[in-house]
Length: 476
Ligand code: HEC
Ligand code: HEC
Ligand code: HEC
Ligand code: HEC
Image (cartoon, rainbow, N blue to C red):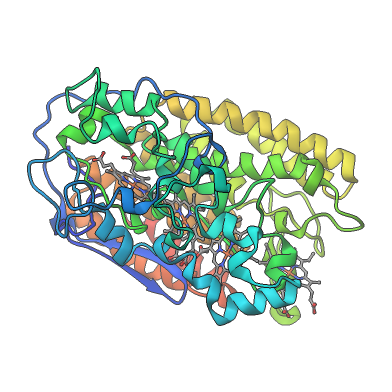
């Protein structure tokens, strides 16, 4: 068993490079960085995950990043040995994590322009910006050391620390094993379960897609906001990770599997969008529905592109505004590898949603509700499943086959597929399922796939497909 080199990349010396090429997220991992673990037994994923509200909407007071950052807590300069956690999380976050800068960028030219176009006084004081670019809890939930300027700080993800910081820093606690019981006690006191894939997805997606309270609507995009794209496992790795999956991590939290994180992330993303589709606020917004739900590039591409071709899963003719179904395609592929009957339901309901988008508001919302039920079932199914080598190989194969069938004519699907392939390859490598030679071949193919999706407006499906087909012939 090998740990994923991507996890724990933060200042731990693992051989990892993440390069941001023209807006595309890519990650390369040197196989040499893999660490062999001596742990003999595989511990099941965390048992007691408490249902929790995303930190922004919880009841706990947020004490501020300064409360976490002392040198004896999480403010060490370098990772410490012999402790359960790295303790240099603050340095990683402050120096390398874009979340630390999320508030500051509300003062830059682009933000000021977006604000002006929207008729806002100032992006740095507007809740619609702060809700995603800072830990914008209401004033009564801000402790004395809380600062909005910390941006997306520790407690925006880990939960207001009011109740857990005491026991957590060595005060009175019942469990004192330094391990799982202690971690579960923290969870009971309001620590957000970030290690649980579904809970993590809900957390990240509340900002990386948005929810009913905060959404980067087409109006906000139209004012100049960049398009959002997200894949849970990739984004967890490139945040970058400020934790290391080692023996004691696995003891406390279970061993993460990237393919499972990916699959659950896809189901959660689709669910989040479908919730918005059926919501009163965004479900019906005048003559045109909220354009956020639709494929941006269905409208935003040159007319001369002449790219249209039939897609089996869509069942729509040319010249139609399409629901952005990248997450739906990914979910179908994940389900196919795990539970083909479920995949069939998802495919049918997905097609029905596309069809309903041409019929009217009620048909559209009903179809969204039906598909949403299937996403909930998919999440439960994935949580029960061990994503072993045969499943991961089926996913990889599915990702390639969908391309061959012409499902990636749209940019968003190609972008998601590229992140998906890298995630599954990483997960297989972490499990020791790939030989060095196989891994090396994938690295070359990944380069070409990432290059093909580097710029959305220059995406050419044929170039992407050519790279994709090499996976089919590379013996995996
Ligand atoms: C639903 C959450 C959400 C809302 C609402 C939102 N943003 Fe963002 N914003 C994001 C995310 C997430 C990113 C990062 C996108 C990425 O790189 O994938 C981002 C990126 C940006 C960027 C580009 C940053 C860069 O590094 O290039 C700017 C500028 C920005 N937002 C300004 C604003 C302003 C101004 C507002 C208010 C009008 C706003 N945002 C509202 C979530 C949001
Ligand atoms: C964008 C969300 C996000 C922010 C911001 C964030 N974290 Fe994390 N953190 C995570 C995720 C995801 C994990 C990995 C899952 C897990 O182990 O719970 C994690 C893991 C951890 C761990 C667990 C390590 C282990 O071995 O169990 C610690 C400690 C930690 N973070 C501290 C911090 C501190 C301190 C800050 C602020 C300086 C911070 N985090 C900011 C998301 C975040
Ligand atoms: C409170 C809102 C919020 C939450 C919660 C949140 N993010 Fe973000 N995230 C943002 C914003 C805003 C940005 C853009 C910051 C910037 O560009 O400076 C961002 C940027 C990122 C980036 C950098 C993207 C790029 O283009 O380089 C990654 C990676 C990321 N987030 C991962 C995550 C993960 C993983 C989680 C969940 C564990 C998460 N985020 C939770 C708001 C959030
Ligand atoms: C149904 C077609 C349609 C879809 C789908 C659509 N848009 Fe638009 N978009 C438009 C129209 C129409 C305008 C207004 C153009 C104008 O004002 O000249 C626009 C304007 C914009 C602008 C401002 C361009 C400018 O000239 O300043 C941006 C940026 C933008 N959209 C981004 C997006 C993103 C991101 C998505 C996907 C989430 C998206 N759009 C989905 C039709 C669409």
